[in-house]
Image 1 (tube, rainbow, N blue to C red):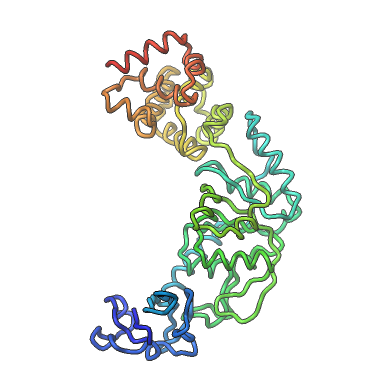
Image 2 (cartoon, rainbow, N blue to C red):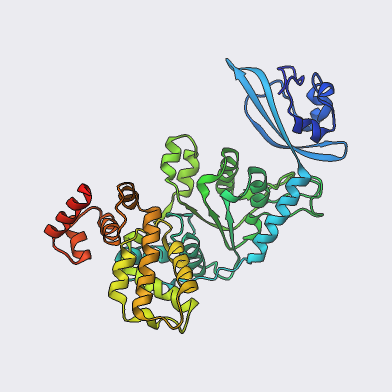
Length: 424
């Protein structure tokens, strides 16, 4: 922290370690004694945050952020944070290697979907039409609903199918790393920077598609830069001095309600309208129950090609069990459930053993995740019938008629059982 005239008034131990200067010597120094004014800029008239300034000190490059503290529109103090650019480069290299190891090829296609849900089929039809357009797509959906798989299918159905598909998870990277991953950097941008610089994903995705997952997680400064990229179709690398034209179709995804983020001042309204052109809403698995059994057996066949016979003739009972749970983790959770089942399913077990094993695993998940089951647990309602019945009622939106039908009992019997649970 500095005074309005730039002299250091407060510093933490990390700063003294980074700079190699004892605290007593650091206090009172002018910030320009540490970082040159030519790189830091004019701090006295600073009114807005100045982020990601690359400054050189004793042959070491630092990424410096300047945050003015204003009182009645006048500079009261200046908060300064900095990071050794070499550390950023090291982390960035590790992340970039992991991204590259995945490859830039979209593996999934619309032909892979075999949904029996009219709701989901309508989403696929709309996505197929969107694939022939060039406008930005935003995919809304809960965690585990398959947003990236849909994005890959859109890419492979588009005119850009033979070009790269470059995904990046915006929530997995810090602001500095995300900026260099998105826009790249020029040679000499910081210590350890690759000779010749490095392309960002916007350049890597040339003529193809860039998939920005968890778009709602990006910071305000990155939002501003992304908005300019979308408007101008140009990027400037970190530490660069020239604009680079880009040609990539953008698909974004989020598990958050972007408009609520706009209302809360977290997400820029102008960026919201720029990316909110073509919208797709992926329904959660609980809203497409027709697909639970087909997906279950798809994952089961993949894991145990010859081990599905124990459950093949139990589809009706199996469907009742699987649909009694609301699957908050959606398709990803269902796949993990099948992996768990395969790990403990005996090869020589009977059909009854297999279905009982499924029931036990479902009950375990209901106890952990279902709000109804938690309420039941607090009242010592732990028997299997109670938990399954309450979960079925939840899955039916507390509709007693539908729940009774799903459970194979009359509404009168359902009402009587609920009364018994309440009084127990």
